Length: 288
Image (cartoon, rainbow, N blue to C red; front, top):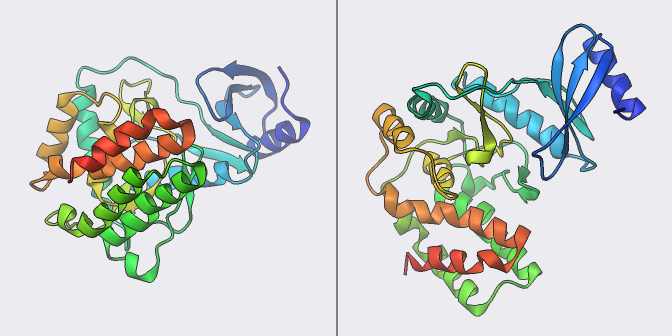
């Protein structure tokens, strides 16, 4: 197949190599994906989309994850408004110690700290905007940042979408009043987070190790990242055990994880509809 002439020209100019073939790949629900084969022998992974800022945000997130030097993610080769060209990572079989190593390396990622909560730019969580730029009072206050930029932002979207029932509204107000108490004892410096880690957002590379893809990066509480991993089936117990042995979690994490799951469930409510409403209410009720 053929790429747009502008896209092809920019890629060939940047890489200094002629595109020999383009292979369509399956699996993406937001963007179109391709494997690019160059005459030089180089291969690359291309995603295209008409969203004007999505790929810039993805590139910045991948580059931020790479700073930690903790866990592999694709290197950014070239990014434009309508496409991103990444290192092509051949997928292999999981090593015998896959989840043990994954847990340790994910813990190492979380040991990379930021100066304040949030990020220097907003980005995306799926196809939803994720608000990251903190107000002054949120930079050092995780509860303030998390409620305003995560829970309240999603609630406002739910209002616009017609999902803000009196039950949901009352639950959000209750959480606002109780959040400091719910999170008490978990205070930590801002950690570098993938932001959207579930089984669809990592791959197994050619060496049998985990590789992170499709981040929604910001600096926050690492418990939020771990809670997301448990939302859709979870990872193996070895992953969580090795993580906690390497970088122990504070007591009460199991109690706090529902507040972090709520953000993602509300995002799914806003993206996909009322099938996620009852789950959102269930998570809120766990704190009543």
